[in-house]
Image 1 (cartoon, rainbow, N blue to C red):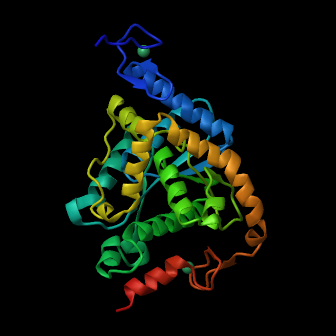
Image 2 (cartoon, rainbow, N blue to C red):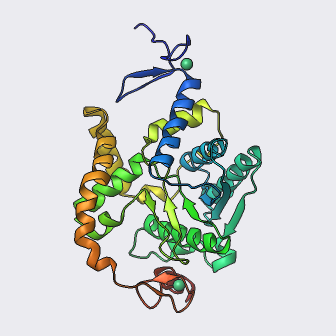
Image 3 (spheres, rainbow, N blue to C red):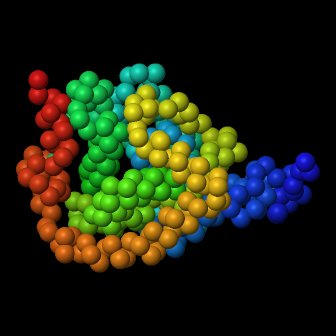
Length: 313
Ligand SMILES: [Zn+2]
Ligand SMILES: [Zn+2]
């Protein structure tokens, strides 16, 4: 087979963008991907000049890629990056410890100070404690709840304007598919690549990588030689979303670009219709949790309910 040349230089192409047929060398692929993220950030007005952006860095490839891309974006747009690592206390394979070290090394390389929140120290329990209780709720969903809570709480404490996370296109698509299967209109209508700050207790969230395929992020970190945690979370094998993700990859293999078309189409065409129907519901007021003061629609927030389940004997 004849090797293709990069569209922008005389190097051999290291990859071809499947859905557009664009052949690119390593350097131009990295630039191309960064430009696409910049475009997403601008198109959806994710970051405004002067804002403080709290970035959840887990040590995985997505958040490591986002850390480097946002750092690069600072050349064009003046804003602050506050990287934060949540140490969930996963002992198996030294998962949390290794993830934290990788997050710190990447931040050091970029001249950023990493903030670490050890949930065992701060809230009195670890993810291992949650797992040992064998709750009905899947562990990955509990982990998601913990991360969302801690990121929001730290964003308030650190006066951040927004919380950025490394969710990619495949994450977004599997979330849509999962809630479509369940016909959970409320969750679907709330899904957004940019959630505005609701009030001073509910900080806005952005997902700058939501239009980037997972395998493109893998190429990006490989081509840029970035260190990331490449072992899977020891609890991830329980996740049914992994199976959904495989189905989506099969779909993408049959029809290149299908995932991107679906996610973009969902946000542009379907969501406005769902949101209209959902508006009346939205207006029900959020109160604050009696125990921790964070926003909730019930008396005690779901984080505090979880905590009391784990800590009481
Ligand atoms: Zn090139
Ligand atoms: Zn609470």
